[in-house]
Length: 95
Image (cartoon, rainbow, N blue to C red):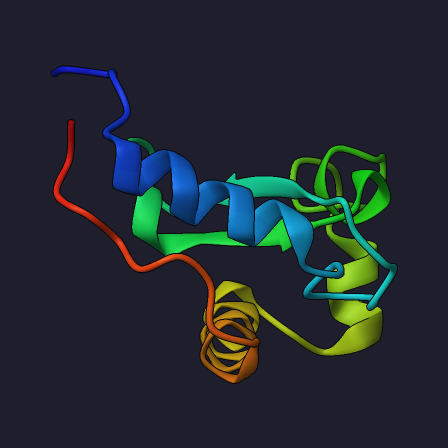
């Protein structure tokens, strides 16, 4: 599998990382958590605690249970935030 990111994928991930955490709302920059490996467009923004912290998604998931969300809830919120954000550069064709 080719792990090189296209220009569009890099731009998308940069927008994801600029969003607040999709679980607790902590202001960005955030980490991009991939719901599925190598699927750039189903990534969600997470702060360190909600991502890699001991109570995050890669830990025991306590924070996720406290906020009563799962990855699809956060993906839904992420898409909504992306669509509501001010217009950015249009995606040109990949270089």
